[in-house]
Image (cartoon, rainbow, N blue to C red; front, top):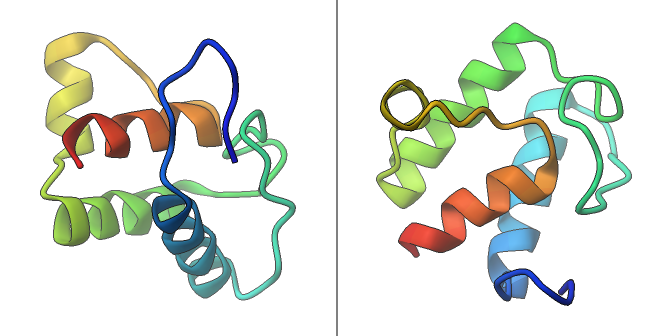
Length: 88
């Protein structure tokens, strides 16, 4: 999945994220770049913590620390994938 005007997001990253979302939510998700993590995918606080742990374990990214230092918050799949892609 790519989008003009944004950095290319490798398919492997997208597929890994989709697998992880299915694992933590225990259901299939309609994954689009503009899907909102809470509203569209139904992630609650525990799911978001699990995603942060997964990002740290698989990509070495501390999303909480990064958000605190940059002021960036992640609202959509695109936001999350861009963070993963920046450090991949």
